[in-house]
Length: 335
Image (tube, rainbow, N blue to C red; front, side, top):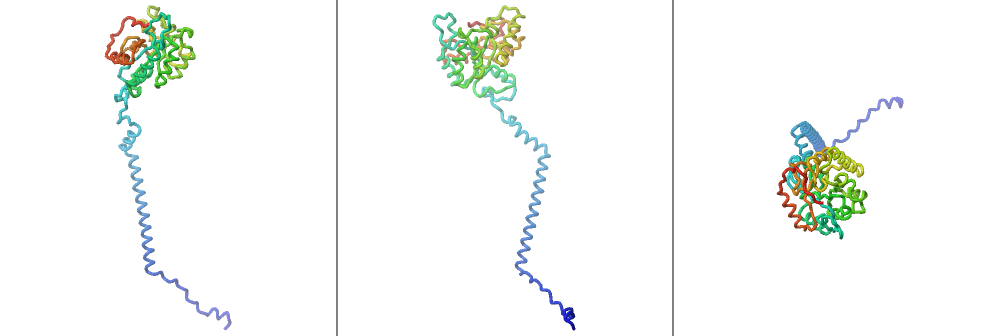
């Protein structure tokens, strides 16, 4: 037999078999596999539950409404506080607000023949403002009061008061502005278009702009600051319209309010002020301004020279009880 034949006839050796793992090792592998399968099943179940919860919460109108109310409308459950500490419902404000009026914040010059009551020295003014702050008052503007009366816009915490200054005296900028600024307060300047010249103690245009930059409100006292009663109605309306437009153009502010010069007015004057586009006007009648009154007859309290801080606080509190009858003639005159 050839060598090749011998190779063909040689029996095939048996195939080696891998020995089986011990019984303990097979058991541990089975346990691990079962644990992995159980963990995977648990994850799938959790995912299904989360998806179901998300779907239900997004489609439930009760959950959506509760979430919107809690996030978007917190004021529906927590009332805000108005300027006088009362809860505000967002409607028009109903509280009265006192308005003060000052003239010259300086000592009266020697030889002056003007009414001494018009002069409040700087130390008196400073003491009065400090007493107001200590009593819980803070200064606001007429525009802010109007927004409170119209829409319930907050005037801040504490007791609001408006501090106005008539006739455009330079002492309003030189003296009153720094005092109010030190308290974080602002004032209201009632300015005639052609009032006192600077040589006679009147405000310059630069000083008026300085008041406005300091947060003060600018309003009108007409063209010259002279009393308006007895004039021609048509001419009166034209002059008042011109005064407002001139101040608006010159200083770039609204000029919404009018102050009757010397507190003098009648029905003709009131009608002319309305026709000229003002939103209201102030008088010198001693009482607090309230939203039920005619906006064109808002009262103010005149602060005269020699008034102590205690007297001013008494003057303010006493005037709150004053009830004014609708005037049919001119108001009081104070220089």
